[in-house]
Image (cartoon, rainbow, N blue to C red; front, side):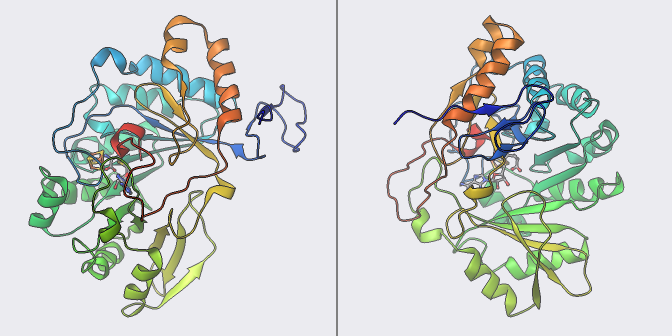
Length: 346
Ligand code: SAM
Ligand code: SF4
């Protein structure tokens, strides 16, 4: 089947779907306004669901320079993208990451600069991130117990993350969100404690269904659905669904008397593809229009060999390969998507 060409309106004109200006719209009519940009594949943790124990990281010359990351971001913003999440690997272990973040914070048209981190470096970086214009932080935390944390991350120190969470608050960040990957037999007995911790620290929290990326052996035994987690939490809290959205795939619930939102990200049990508004660019400059599929557009050779007009055209063309949706299935014994999350940026 020949794919329908992507629709990109010339400045000041209307597209057939009613968008105006420079706008990225895929062949299913979804507007892409959100870029998740991974600035490194390296990390100071080795979370079991994200990385192999012995990871081979990319050679430096295959990773985008920070200047190249900035060029990509500028082209996307010129095409109407107004939200950008910096991710990785662990973005804050990249040398001079703050230089890029300051440039992005000052980029006209980029209204919503946000960052996902494991929190280990936040004690040092929370204040400069806030000063640079980062609007919100997501911090990954799957357990509150030091030994368990060490087992999940293989090398992480939970106290650094606790200090990072406190530093974020002190720097003025509000609505910081914890991301908790749900794993049966590993942290399913802690969901209630994690919610209590979030309420006490005025944090939002999202429980994430584990996705079958990278080495998936045994994942079908550890998978927990959002529904099951909600049932567990419902025995301890009165959860009221709320319409609010952070613009992402999470569905939110509230507990009376508290500001915190309790979210569930359900790639398996609730497919959120219809309203997908995002694409990802890896540290290698690979544009992935869908986290759960293998379609890719290689931007690095274009970045290095050609000018920004060609880069812009390649990004526009990528709208033609954005698939309708993912097809994760926890029953799969062979990974459909062979990338580790640290490669794609979560
Ligand atoms: N290092 C940062 C962190 O941990 O927040 C940013 C990158 S990490 C790849 C982004 C998010 O992806 C984290 O919240 C992590 O828990 C999540 N993640 C990694 N592998 C996953 C998997 N297989 N299924 C679901 N979420 C995953
Ligand atoms: Fe590192 Fe984040 Fe992956 Fe954990 S989830 S290994 S912290 S990139």
